[in-house]
Length: 196
Ligand code: HEC
Image (cartoon, rainbow, N blue to C red):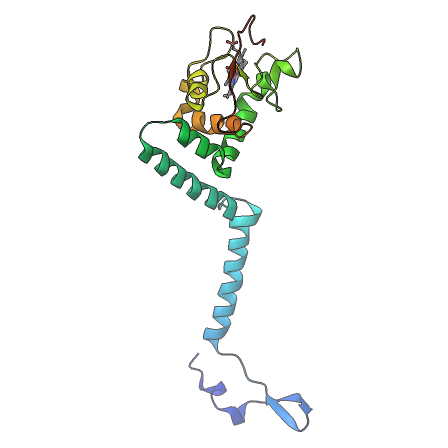
């Protein structure tokens, strides 16, 4: 960098071209400049591999979902005990509903179907319908949390120990996102496992 040869302009050669009589010295770029360029190129390659090619680094969506989840958790923790109002609120919150949908898809769809209609849609399905105003165990949000956590004697497994409170509330929020607060609740018997 301290090579005096290219500090003095007159000793630099001219570039061969001339435009409107303007000529350019063939001046070497300073080393600090070149190194900055090289380092940004190396950085961009590493960055590209880390975030895009290998997927080791979290993408923006993952980062923001994680942050939203943290906020939801904090909100949930600050509420203390669960109540209908909190669960209805969660059911209108896309972050909770999306998380609940993911759990529903992996855990509940096998019996309740992706439509949530279960037996009402297909006799081959094991689970009761979670759509409409007819419920076996009640349609209030806290009642749903109770059934999903504790299960029933007629074939609904107890998910509390498997999923934990947060995922239970999310999956219930997802079920509630198919309902409206204040809609009528009609209690029907469960004559045979899962049938209404
Ligand atoms: C192994 C099959 C099976 C799986 C998996 C399953 N359920 Fe069920 N579920 C049932 C059956 C069967 C019933 C009806 C139980 C009864 O009649 O006592 C039921 C009932 C329910 C009810 C009560 C419906 C009412 O009318 O009161 C809710 C709510 C429910 N399930 C939610 C879920 C959720 C959420 C999941 C996933 C975390 C899930 N279930 C996974 C079989 C299943």
